Structure formats: structure tokens, C-alpha cells
Length: 445
Ligand SMILES: Nc1ccc(Br)nc1
Image (tube, rainbow, N blue to C red; front, side, top):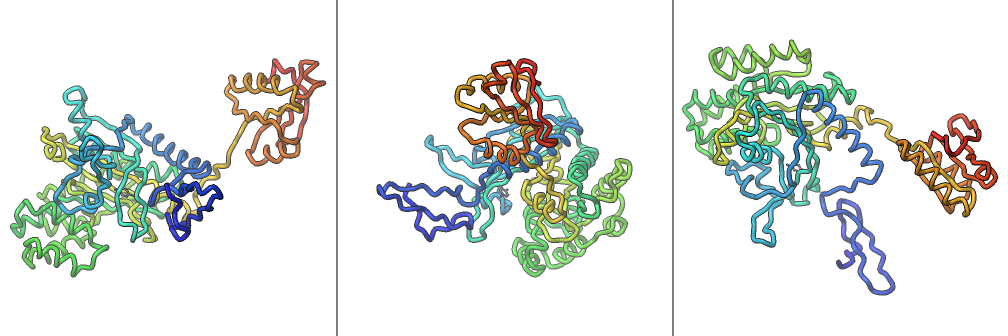
């Protein structure tokens, strides 16, 4: 690789290669544009966050699954103009196959459910945490990868599934110390939009496109949205009707406009009554403007937001009852959500909720001179076999070892010295109390 020019800016960081004397080239040590390294401190935070995802998935009785990050491009070819399909990280592999770094997880889940066929008993509740990609022109300087926690339920046609997923999200927030004063979850249903389109006799085949356009409310101006809707063939009455209904934030008002026999109203009323039973009603609110931007949603949709309005959506999801038939299979009702690893960390920083995750090691074992390196290995090995984390240190001055012990929050310093070893003993220092004593090497625990 050629040494990048000194003016190259990668990930916003100037990469400053040193021109080596022998003329060899130096690789750019930054990760590829839009991607992140996870050095130990960042990795501890990521592992902690993923452990919270896993613990919530466990208490919700979901099973973990996983998929290749690389998928066939065909899984993501959709014609609804979604951002996600316009930013596919796609390429042709050496076998001439059209492949992508997956932009989302749901199509892989659907693929596996289809592949498993009759062998899966429904309902199935699966979760995964996986890296997702997009090829975004770096002009916007946004990331090209993030990790997403996904939870999906297949084979549960009623809104119980959505209420289960909402509980999972709220349990996660509670585990992180986030309250319903910090975060809310906007809930609506695409059937609201469907009912409005029916009122104005908008052809069914425009439904998905209308959803993708309306999802841009808040990102595009109202005029731009109206223009896009008219461009795809909606009458100005239909456009005004859509904008009016989607501005509703009261379920009773929605019932007044659409009538109580509309499925959307019945679903939402049931969901909000379940919320009372689950005990999370103060977390959720009806907001008809929520449609989410993925083409395949067919029913209830939801997204979590920070009430200060400083951040992008924290997570989002919804029902997608007709995704499998787009892959040529029999439909199975499904719903799920995706929860990214980036916005939530920004929120935790905002709220001062980042956990203290400093490194913790049980023991440092240190031979006081070279001839004791062997005994030090056997002491370290015995402690490790007991499950203790042991940092075996050599070729250092004792002063460095004490500083190192502080740096890695070691519990004990085990010193292997000549005179003690000859008596079958080692010296133990408890670093928190400075207490020091000798222990038989064979009885060290
Ligand atoms: N879908 C997607 C993938 C990667 C990132 Br970063 N954001 C969204």
C-alpha cells in the first residue's frame, strides 16, 4: 500500500505517515473510512452494552442466532426508494456473484426462517447482535458500519408480539439507568396510513412508496414531502388528508377520524391497554407521524427517541407480515426491531450514565529474579486453573510492577523470591490494604 499523502484525512483524523528511510511504504494505520477500531477501553464499553442486550434477550426467552455479514445482493433489492437500499455496500465477488455487506439483519432472519421451513415451531423468538454496513458518500462524514441488536418474533399475528418487543426495549433502557423522563417510544401503525389512502382511493401499489416518503417528515420540509407525494400521483386532497391524519397524537382523535372499526385503531387500543398491564405505559405514546423508513413494514411501527430531541432515533421496529412472500415463500406474520450501538452511547454520555469499566485483574505474579521465572510460571498457572485472572510479569523493575498493578487494578501482587521459594513459600501483597504475608505456594488460592 502506498503511504497516504500527508494531507489525507481518514475518519476525520489526519493520518501522518512517517516517510521511512529505506523507501518502503507505510500503511495508513487508520481503519477504513467510516469504520471504527475498538481498543480495549472502547471494547469494554461495547462488551458491557452487548451484555445488556443479551441479558434482556435472555429474560425475554429469545434464542440467539447469527448470520454472515456477507449476503446475496438479491436479498436487499427493493424498489421503494429507501435510503438503506440506495446505500448498499455491494460488489461482485471473484466468482462473479453480486453480494453485499448487509445493511440490516431482518432479511437474513427471514431467509433462515424460510430455510428452516417446517422444522421451526412457531412462534419463534430470535435475537442477534451484528455489524451492519452502508456505503455512504463520505461527504456527510457519517459512519459506514454499526452494530445492531435485533429481536424478532415470527408466527405471532396479534399485537402481543409488539408489546413483547416494547417490553424488551424498555427493560434495556431501565438496565442502563435511562428513565421514561429521558426517553419515549412513539407508536403508530402503517394501517393508519393505509386507511387514509383507502379514504382517497389511492392505488394499493403506491402504499410502500408513500410510507418511505412520509417517513422523511421532519427530515424534509412539508413542501418537499407534498411535492414527492404529488409526483408519484397522489391528489392534493389525498396529500392534505395524509398530512392532517399523520399530525394526530391522540388515539381518541384518530378513532374520531377513522372510526373505531378500523384495524389500526383496534390494534393500537389493544397495545396501549397491554402497556398498562406490563407497567410501561408511561414510556409509550401514540404519534401517527411514525411510519419508519423500511419498505416491508405492514402494521404497528415504533421508534424510541430522546425527549431532549438532541439525537436521532435510538431504535425502531415494527410488524412485517408480508416479507417472506417477497422472497417467494409462504408468509409468516413477523415483527422486530433494530437497536444500534451508537446513538445509545451518545445518550448515555449525555445523561452521565456511562459505567466505570476500568480493567480488573485478580493477581500479578512477579519473579524477583531471573532464576525464579520458572516457579513464577507454575504459580501463575495454578492460579489460572482456579479461574483467577493472572498477569505474569517479567523483566521489569519492582517499581514498574507496583505502578502496573495500580494501572490494571490488580487485587494482589504475588512475589516469587529466592529465600521464600526455597521454603516453599511466596509473598502476597493485598494492594488495597497493603497487607503482606507469606503463603505456601501449593496452597495459594
Ligand atoms: N443500515 C445502516 C447500516 C450502517 C449504518 Br452506520 N447505519 C445504518
